[in-house]
Image 1: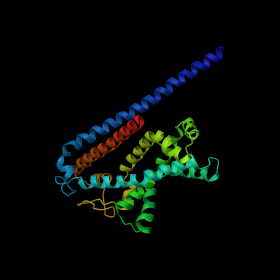
Image 2: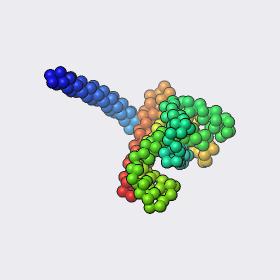
Image 3: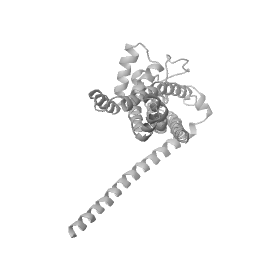
Image 4: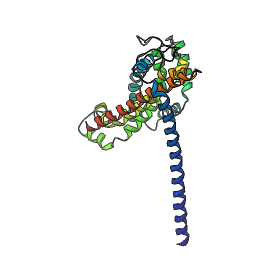
Length: 287
């Protein structure tokens, strides 16, 4: 009994030490984040105004703006969502509701999807350059960039959608089958609506990652200087991360302030995307 009590006491001490280490690590990360945000807002807010949002890039800091980068980002991410969302949901539905879980091809697909989710984004950029830009002759266009980003986030959407479908209780499926519904009717009218809030959340978070990517877009050929707006998905483009990267590479101090202002705009778009995910999740849960 004494040894048992001593073991319990040691485990409690180790548990407290572990919690203290995790708390300190979290606190350090939060402190660095606060300092970084403070520095960005301090440098960027003086440059953030309506003129900055509605002006095109320029080699003169006082004339430079981010309008074409904002429009290019919205073009790219909208097309990426249109491509990746239906493909990701359809793949997750097939793997969870139709394919045999114990089959070799199902296990092979699951393994490859999990591996692709951990591939660095620059690899997808190289793939997009060779496949979409050169092989399919799409050029350095919005369509090529959107297809590349869709490949980048597709594994994440598939995995998160699969997890969402798994959370739907089996009793709902069995009740639907008991009422005479077919498998497709059960999946489309019972399972997917029940899993939709979590699916929306995972998809928006995946798109948020795509918004902040610069490496694959550099490989695909996003323009560092874009003095006009794209008119179609086959036009050249630039995005916020590319424009920010271009400004940070300039030696002038004014461009560092412009880059900080661009980061604030990018953060605002990311927070808006997350807010949209929360609103969609709440609305679908109420329905």
